[in-house]
Image (cartoon, rainbow, N blue to C red; front, side, top):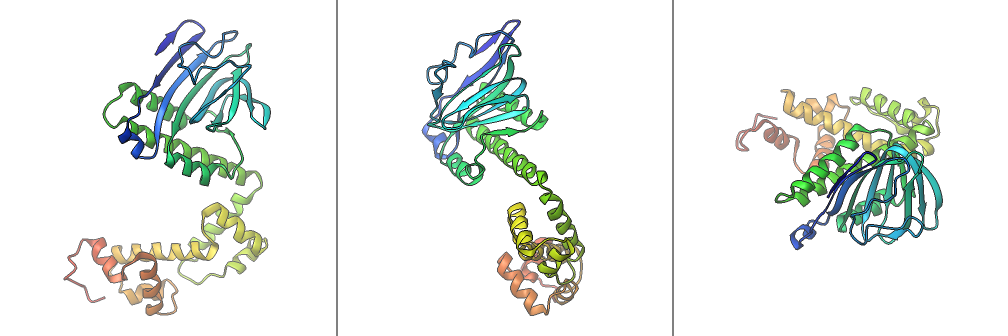
Length: 308
């Protein structure tokens, strides 16, 4: 449905979901945008029951929703979390079964983009990625990439071609990944943790052909090892020693495919105690031997080895 006048504009789509779509584990029920001019009634009419709501009474949805405010300001009220102001650049995350209400200020109005979705994949993403944050309002700023994703989702939904739901599911996951990344990096940036971790990553890359002691690295950064290990793992997903091992293996893979160095030469050049130690670690992490990796990487038939 589309509405246009001098103060109110909207375009939105409510989708029909079939059993095939549900089997993928994430599907989109609605996507759209609304421009609410100053002094205009909110929400606009035309939304089906279950979505349309009285601002003073609020509503409960059966799906997750992302609501992105790109202009203006207003208020959001959440069950057990009280009322808070929201404004341009804020993205709201609404949970199924959660009472909420929100609306623009009458003197400013606002522009909002929204997408509603559900499914087991969405449940898992929320459980592992967002619920630990305890946040439902994220400061995204005027993010052109996020804006483009909402616009593209609306185009796909309105075209309603075959496998549109799978396309939309990919867009939703892209949005969620972006929001999670931005929120995590903002949190680290506020207390200077990111700078320490990024500095450590550079030092590890510079020392990839040597041995590295994580405790000595923490000393060089003037932080305690226990703090450094926890922060580094929260930031990268790896403990410092694991991350350094991954750097070594990545360099080994590059050398196996891109150079004529023997496996023994590569092992010693990367600081491994022996070729056997390198062989064992490489196979444990990749599932194949260094020689087999070289063959596959170069597109060489398995029957033709080069004497490594």
